[in-house]
Length: 278
Image (cartoon, rainbow, N blue to C red; front, side, top):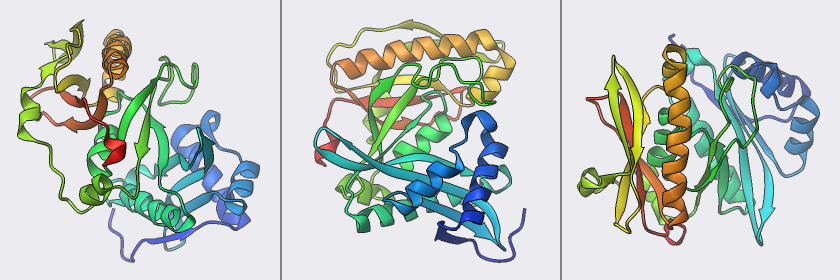
């Protein structure tokens, strides 16, 4: 798809464009995962933010967030971000998050949070490596049993991504300064795996022993894996859940994704450090 005019990013507050966002959600996730029109209108006019990406008036993507407050801290909850599949290689998702960050900083927020599926490696890389977010909370079956086309058939486990938008970690990541220490490749694996007829299978978990960091494998393309082998997909859900939660309970934080071009898995990087102070 070739764009002949630049993509325009703007806050959405008008009824017609909010209606377009509702229809857009249905196209991506199906009707069972839509944030309804009244909630979007209320949030857009009372402290939330709805940002759209447009080309010649056509909605290509959006990001929706509303205010949250917990344990004495106010933050923005980035509830949904979606980009039309035809335009997913134009950097629209990144620009939407950056526009959201700029708005949040101006509005007085210092943190944005959202959830994402731990088995979606591409999303994880974007959230952790591209944006500089981190995860130290894992929610098993966060939304219960979902029936939309991306989540059908498996517990809806989620990481809580925490994005300290004013931190040096985030500023350096967005500026391209931060790179993973080469030593992370030598971290011990907390979950074994193998390829069986070109399908990756999780095997035995290893105990956490207080080392500086660990690696945990995650399938490169979980949606394809689900279509090819439902048994393997379910095994990954439960094995990854156990391995990650064991490490998080010992004080580790998910800090990034180590890409592995030679196999069917990438690796989560878990390190024993407090990134919220960086």
